[in-house]
Length: 153
Image (cartoon, rainbow, N blue to C red; front, side, top):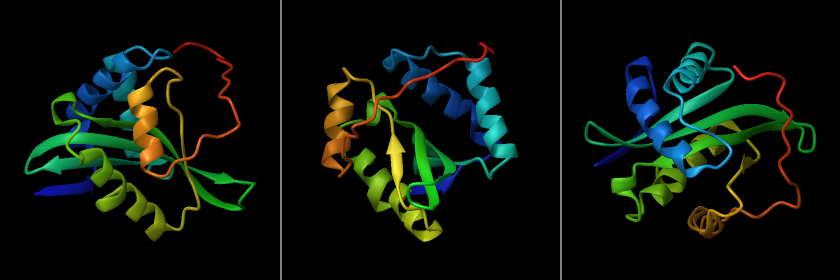
C-alpha cells in the first residue's frame, strides 16, 4: 500500500540518496552528500521554511518532495515552491508520481493548508519531466529563472 508522510531525521540518509539521483539529472546542480544533508537538516529543524514529504510502499521510500513555503505578493497568500521532486528510478513510469502529486500528497496538503499555487522549475531539455508536469495540469510560465550566487558554500 502507498502512503505519503512527512519526513523525519531518521529519513535523511534515504532522502540524500534520492537527491543524489535527482542532481545527476539536473544540469545546474551536482550531487554533494554533505550539502544535501545540511539542507535537509535545516528544513527539518526549521519547519516554517518547508515541508519534506515521502512516498512509501510499506517501509520502502520510493520518492520525496521538498515543498518550500513562501508568500506571493501577486496572490497575497501562501504559495509552495516545489524545490525537489523525485521518484526512485526503479519505481518510475508506474503512476507513482501522479499519485504523489494528487492522490495522496502534495495537492492534498496544499489545499488543506491554504496554499494558492505550486511553482516548480524544470530543466529546459528534460522532456520527460516537462511532459509529466504538463499532464498533471502545470502550465508553463512566461518567466525565466535567473540566479545570482552570493557565494559557493
